[in-house]
Amino acid sequence: MASNLLDTTVEDILHDVFDAGGAEFVVVNPSEDTIEQLVEVSTAYDDELPSIRMLAQERTLKDVMDDFIVASNAADLIDEGVLTMRATEETPENSLLITDDRVIALVTAGETVAGLTTDDAEFVGTAVEAYDREWDDASEFNLRTPPLTRVRQTLGEDISPEAEDAFDAVLASLDTARGDGDGLDEVTISLLVAAKNEELLYDISKWGEDVGIASKATFSRTKTRLEDMGIIDTEKVPIDVGRPRLRLKLGRDELKEADADQLAGVATSILH
Image (tube, rainbow, N blue to C red; front, side):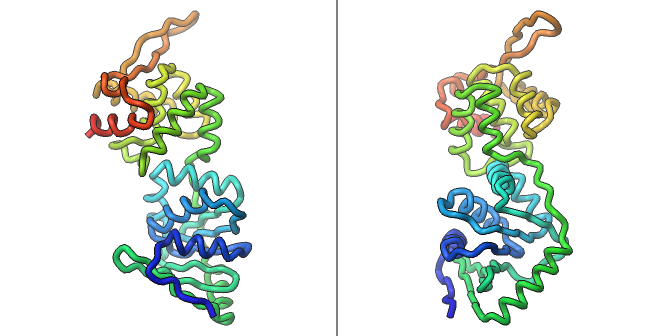
């Protein structure tokens, strides 16, 4: 008989499911925290992952995927053929993990999560059939964020290895990188990294548009906002034909003196 997973965390429950093996499992109506934990645990898991189908409310998926760190790692999992996401406008009755041989209901109590488990074959079969039907009725969730692996690789190739290293250090120093226009979203991070390495605005914005982070216009607007706040400075670089291009530089002494892993913290304090 399957045992309940009590006084634990979502991370522990996911590890238990992964370690048990199995070709596939379905995640039904996950909370924002469960989605974040699923992506984090799956990304870090060293052994072979099952095929993961996630059926979630559309609003929940959109809110979570506003975080570039979560979204780009999820895009990696999708690119690897591990993760598939579908969105439903209906609110499923329960938050569940469904494998071939058990159903786990996720119940939250304060900071603790319990995985209430059954391996009753008839019940598991009924649950699999029911949520297969819901899956078929749901719409595919279109994640527009590029995979982090591709972002890092192209940044190193198209800009510089130093820019890739700085980008990694900035991301590692952040809990979230949300595109809410107020904090360090992926465009702001890219511009800070480019400024630290004194790259051209043209080069970083072209890279960003090509890899799918944002349009050149978005990079330009964000650069203007950061320049108005003194975070970024620019200097004109003449070229043989056409208008001079802009070289990005860090605008404040505290930013210039900061290591890459400190850059986000200093910039955030200035922005707020």
